[in-house]
Image 1 (cartoon, rainbow, N blue to C red):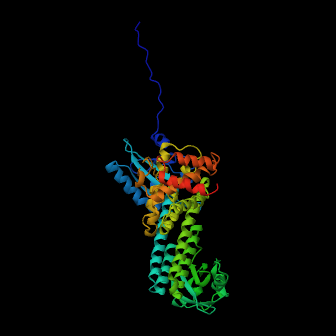
Image 2 (image 1 turned 180 degrees about the horizontal axis):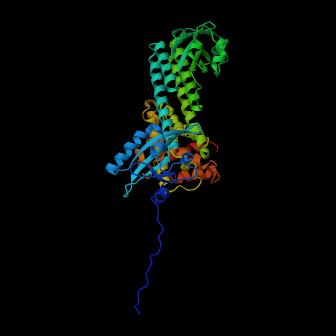
Image 3 (image 1 turned 60 degrees about the horizontal axis):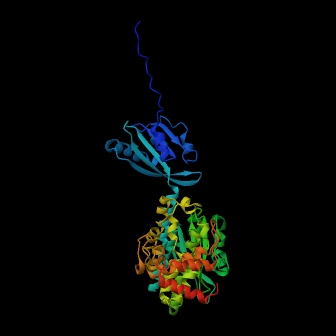
Length: 496
């Protein structure tokens, strides 16, 4: 008999798909395509916004899956990947459920010559980027208008420039300004922009009559949709039907309590607006009112600048309030900490001309948190080291947002440096001692004191005495000892 060795079978091993490996690191949508771009397989999470597009996707070209507008770019990307083997990415947007969404598609090659495409939703980041860019543009526009008004050379030139900013920054088709004639009840056309028919710029309104007249008399904004049904409410505006306007705003131009005119805004479709849009429109209205008032009362130019400054401050406070609403845990913190900072700075006899910059800096101290993702900003538990690294970037975000605006440059000391510490252990630059600007050293004491004496979801507010003792104990470590000494003297004079 011949003996034979039993056959040994290797244990079965589960094959791991490259889709599973990538999906574990980037949950969302992962596509596997061949070198010609034909979809071989995919993996997606249930909550992914592209999920409805998966029907009959397999064995079709990825060109047919992604938006047509980037089909050529997709082919070029695949060809480049085949030649170089270097990963690359492209961005695109889609309208899903009447909302615009942005995505990033990253292409990487496999040893098998197949290609992995990872698609992730970057809408939140893109919206923040758009918001920052819009705010930059708006602040720059306000500064340009301010310089034009301050020069006081030509009212028509100033208002024409303002109207161009109205149309460009607010993305509307046309705008004009009607000025209230001195000692009369007529609002006469003064400047216009964006009209197709010249005669459209030849109208007037009477105080209290028509939409512009009502806005002026009652000093309130008038908004009319479906303007085609209301042509009779305009005076000497015979070409209005030909213009095809649909949406309309009339903004009263009020300076020092006195009506100076009306800013009218026209658009040929319904305006896509939000609270920031309306706030900026009102701010531009205040700018126009100040320009007209300066021309009428040139000897009160200095007072007019105060009005303009108030308009800036109102805009700054509005942004800060928007941040407070986003970060519920610190809601109303900005107002309180600004008050404490100004009191302490005044107690330390900081010059009056510096206080306005300290006030603006305190109001904007956390504006950089607009760039922090919600899942980190609103996290209830302790942040991970990676999340802290992102959170600590908010002073840098504030610097990048505010530095291009020259009139806010003196206020940057607080938003940029308020997390520096006296012993050099702070961030973002690790400054030490008097290297830290005085405004930031003052604010640091006020900020920590208000945080400790305020309610938080994770702890109760500290008694004032306990918070004060903590501040005293951190002199020479976290805080400037000189500032702490002044704080000690100040609270000794104020009943807590």
